[in-house]
Figure 1 (cartoon, rainbow, N blue to C red):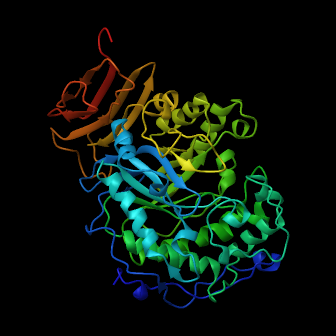
Figure 2: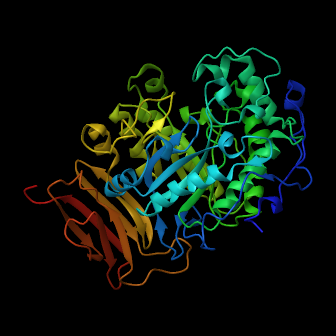
Figure 3: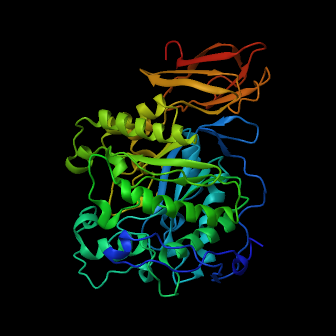
Length: 504
């Protein structure tokens, strides 16, 4: 019974240790079945048994076989109680996102919030997150649940792991701030090494095993919620002592530690939820152009989630070769995804007030037909002050919104496609999109009259828009925020162009 936390087939067991010897040895073993203690009642957060969005090859698709493209933003609260509604995120914000064409939010979840004590799940915390999911659902917005961390834990000035899961080895914590703590703080490095070696936690369970159990409880809670389209296993995993990179990346860590860890957590999730897409990331150094050496994650419906940050902009605040770096990162993400025959999705980029840098990351994502969530809508985030909405306590209107950033992000894009996307672009105020009517699963073509929906945010066309279509017909109202095209009888390709209304 997945709604009963005491009945979950948790992984249990401990293996490995936090020392250098343990780190270089075998990966912590998956132990015998165990149970997690309940922290309250655990009703399911959803009622439907079949999720509407899964994966088909390199695409996200819905139950009708249509391709689903997602554009949106992050909403991650890094400070207790780790839930955006506590900072003011609510219905007005969800309506604002929908009105500007966004259809997904990457919603932060914190290990410290889910499991404040070893083996004890806080279902009141999950219920508060579920309420935010429902608020977004009411506005037609999907959710990716992101198990977030920065600097491993609040113990180091970041967020993520609860204090009981921090093993410093007695080494000093210099509190050097983000991101220097990652590379220069001995206690931080030891904490990561302890995690990756599956060192034993206070409850006698290995840290990685416990993390998998924790995810199993989260997945069981949200199983059946059709608006949760992704479980993202860990934000920006850091290799610890093995982080010293070469131009070839971190092959030993990726292959020997990160891939088995993802397999373990994915197995725990799939024990209670067979279908919700599982998002997994390369190690954080991929963000800046280093390659990944991840293997294949042994689970159905997986998505390669990557981040794209311009290193020069992040360090110096200038746009130097950011477009070239974005091209490299996105091309490497697409190459990995195609090799594994899974979708790629850019779950973070931005974190800057330089809108050109943001556009530089969006352009290759469009070129490779990849969806995204930008950092960030609002956040209680000590590491990045760059938000779309400045004060989460106030409505997202007027001077509380970064209008230039909104105009950069709220571009037209296909949301639901009855066919296979070929290309789309938005240049000089004109949106162009081409798709075939072939189904992405190879099972024939969509029938004539099958609809395709395109988001056309009003901020890009304040005086209205005009549409040119070959192979289809416009069936939505003039200047509708969602442009709907029905394919013509006999059409194999549909081409759509959206431009400002004449005289607009």
